[in-house]
Each structure stands twice: as structure tokens, then as C-alpha cells.
Image 1 (cartoon, rainbow, N blue to C red):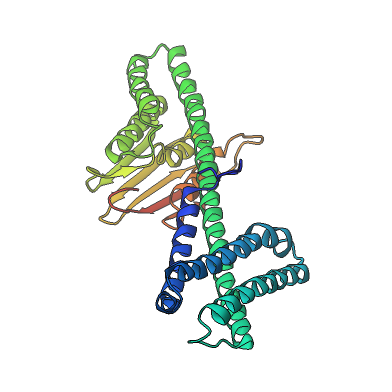
Image 2: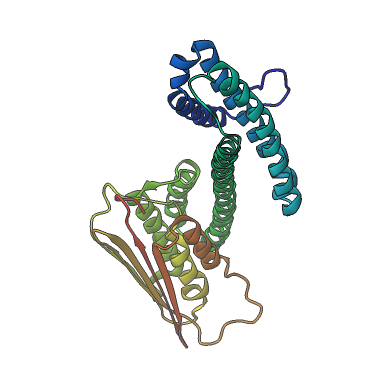
Length: 351
């Protein structure tokens, strides 16, 4: 909203709040000075109210837009309060002179006005109305600042979440393509089935993973495809099982959230085992929460210079961004076993 005769603009909400405030102040004066209609006539009554409200508006916005930001908010308190008192004194001189004319000459036969009473009334009423305007402005500024902070925070979190999600995809593809490469070298008949499952997973990643929430059954299907691909790679010497209890229908979850737990177990556990390897997972869907536990064996001694570890780090960051205060993620790193347990509380069937 553009200010008349100025290049400055103000928010419409700001204008509406301040307009409502001055309408209330004017209404109060209309009620307080209504006796002037009968004693001095309508023109003097209107002039009395307009002069008083006009003067108050002048010193109020001088205070809000000049004294307050220039002195009070910069810590120059003595200068600020001195200028406020000076502006009130100027108001008292003008208003007192006007009151003297109204009460001393226009309605002198019917009403006497004491100068001390007039100055005292004008001084304390002016302090009262200025005192209301300052917290009103500070409250509006604080509210707008909080809205801006919230907007920036949401944008920052969304940008960070998109960055973390983008890290998941290449991390996952790197592992799967290595698996497919190993099968093609062996000319395995399982390679075509692996390509088909990978195609289904890529469809999910391309068309669904950009959504804020996806159906939980899709996320579970994506996870099961991944496990099947790993089973093909590991062959018969591995014991891999995922048990699902509960009904996922009608529930939603952030995409690509469950994969890191399983992927971490295969990358640093099952995939590194020389002998018999195993991975046991459970996914339990309760009325108010989802619990997932992945436990696997691992080499007692990890190879030197091993790269990795971004999966669970990213998962923890995503959980903190998406479900602050609504999740727990615990890990137990034993001598030759590793266990990860994730629990997320539901909110209206959404995770």
C-alpha cells in the first residue's frame, strides 16, 4: 500500500491495524467531548476532536518512525526520552492554547477550566496513548519478524532436505550398479530380474520421491525390491529376511526414509562377510507409531580405509528436519553384530 505524497509503501495489515487503533481513539474522544455539541455547537465539537486527534497522530508517528528507530532501538535512551518529552510539551502548548480558546471564550459562561487541570489531563492522556502505540508497533514488528524467521527457516530446512535426499539417490545407485556389474560379469540368469526390479525402483525414485509424503505401502514395496536385489547378489549363503506386521494402507511417510537402515546393514555388514552372513529385519505398524529394527552380523575387524557412513548420518539429519521430537534412532555396534532401531510416531496417519 503506497503512502500518499510519498514513495514509501506499507503493508496493508499494518495500515488496517493502525486505522482501527485511531478509529477507537477518535471514538473515545467523540464520547468524552459530546457535551460540547450542546454547549459550544457542532463546529466547535468537531474542531476540538480533530485538533486533539490530529496532534496525537502527529507526535505518535514522529515517535514511531523517527525517535524510536533512531534513538531507542540504537540504545540512545536519554536522547529518546528527552525528545519524547519535548514533543509532548509542544503538544501541551498547542492543545492548552486551543483548550483555553474553547473553554475560556466559547463556553466561558457555562464552564470554567483550570490551567493545571488542563495541562495535567493532556500530559497524562498523551503519555497513555503514546505508551499504547509503542508496544503496538513493537508487537507488529515482532510478529512480522517471527513470520520472516519462520519463512527463512522453512526454506532453509527444505533446501537442506532436498540436498540430503539428492545424496541418497547416487549413494543407492552406486551400490546397486556394482551389484548388477558383478552379475553381468558372471553372465548370471538373475541379471534380467535384477534390471526389472531396478527399473521399478527407479520409477519410484523419479516420480514419487520428490513428494513430501508418499503412501507407506509404496515405501515398503521399494524397500522389499531393494532387499530382493541384495538377495540375488548375495546368493544362497546369506540368511536375509524382513518381517512386516500391521496394515500400512492409508498411511503416509516421507520418501526414501527406510532404505538407509537396510542399505547400511548390507554395505557394512552382510556385504563384507566372508562366510555365512545374515540380516534380520522387522517392521511393525502400530496404531500410533511405526517401529523398524535391522540387525545383522559384520566382520569383527573392519577393513582399513573403508569409505562410507553417509547413509545413517543423512537419515538422522532428515529425521531431525522432518520429525523433530517424534522419533528415536538407536544403534548398537557390537563386536560382530550391528543393530539399528527406528521409531516414529504417527500424526493423523502420517509419518
